[in-house]
Image 1 (cartoon, one colour):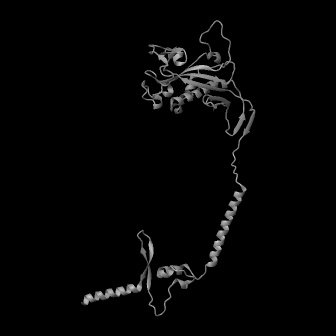
Image 2 (cartoon, helix red, strand yellow):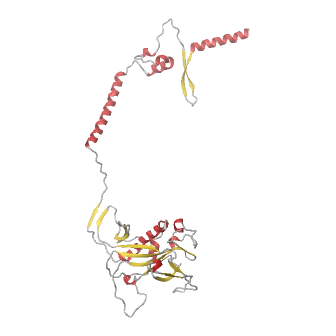
Length: 364
C-alpha cells in the first residue's frame, strides 16, 4: 500500500466543493473505462501552520543520548494556546525530518498507553477528529542556514517558515485528522507512520510555496492514516458497475449534407462541360509550333487574335522585301537560356558596311 503496490486496495484522491481533500480507499487495478458504485472509507486532514515565534524554543540540551546510547540533539519548546492555539511542551530533534505527536491517539490505534495504570481504559472507537502536532524539516531544507538565504523567495519571507540556527528552516503544524468512520474498533499499529509521511510528501511539487507544501502534506497525512484503515477492509462486489466506450458521433443537418453533395456534383459537371467545349473549339488550324514561331518572328501579329495559321503572320507579296531572321539562344543572368532573334538582312548590311570601311582605311 505504502509503495502504491497492492493487489487489494488503492488510495484515490478526491476534493469536494469546499476544497477539502480526501484520501479514499478504493479497489486496486482500476480500469479508467470502468465506473462503479460502492461504499468505502476516506480520511481527511487539515493542517494549520504555527507562525514563527508562536512557540518558544530553548537552547539545545547538552550531552543527550537516546535509548541506545547514541548522541541525539534535543531542543526544548513550549507552545501556549494564546499564541499557537495549543498548550504543549516537548523536545524537537533534528535526527528525523518528519516528526509527529498524536494527541491521545493511543486510544484509537490500540498502541500501548504512555503509562501503565492499575486500571486500563476500555477500548474506544474513533472519535473524529483527533489532533496531530507535526514538526516538518526535510522538504524545506535547501541549505543549513538559519537566516534562510538558501530558501526560495516564497519561503524566505513567510512567517509560517521558521528559521533556526540548529535546524535551519522548518515548519510546525497543528493538524486535525478526520476518518470516514463515525465509530470503529481500535486499529492495531506496528511502529510509527512518520516514515509514511516522509515518503509520501517527498518531491519538488511540495516545494513551490509554503501553501502548496502544507496542502500536499495534508493529503500525504490522509494517505498515511488510510493505510491501517485499509488493512481492516476487504473488497466486495460493487452495487452498480458499467464499462464506458468512446465513440465519435457527428450530427449534420440533412439540408446541409445534400447541399454539399449537390455542390460537388455541380462543380464536377462544370469541369466536364468546360473540357468538352475546349475540345470542340480546338482544331488542326492552330498549333503550338506555329504560335511559337509567330511569337519569335512576328511579334506584332502574334499579339493579335487569329483563327488559323494564316492569321499568325503578316502577308507579304513578291514585291515586298522579305526580312530574313535567325533564331538562337542566349544565356540569362540567372544561369538559364532564352530564345533570341537576329535580323539577318540588317546584320549582313552592317557587316558589308564594316568591310567597306575597313578596306577604305587600308587603301586610303
